Amino acid sequence: MIEGSCHCGRVRWKFDVAPASATACNCTICRRYGVLWAYDLAGKRTFVSGKMRAYAWGRRGIGFHFCANCGCVAYYRAFKADAEGRTRTAVNLRMAEPDIVSRIPVKHFDGLENWNYLSGDGRCVADLWF
Image (cartoon, rainbow, N blue to C red):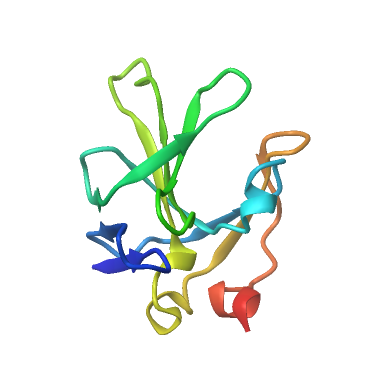
């Protein structure tokens, strides 16, 4: 299990398994937030708690949830379920302690131009933090 919290500690999340990878996205919002996402489906292995607010833009397909006190981005969640009834969500691995997530491989996603994963470069979370 991996746990994360915002800076003030009022928002927390738990991810019941170690994710296979972290995703670094270069879209207009993710690059500004500086997040590393671990993906899941709502109600499966990811649990969040605390007072949060959400931000959405454009078609409002995804809400970015952040601590109402310190402003740290904790997770995102799709507003609508897909055709199979699943709701996409992801937690921000940068809220976890570095030693717990440091060896997780990073996948790079081009969310700015073509919505494709880029070829891997072999880096892990620690390579982006330290």
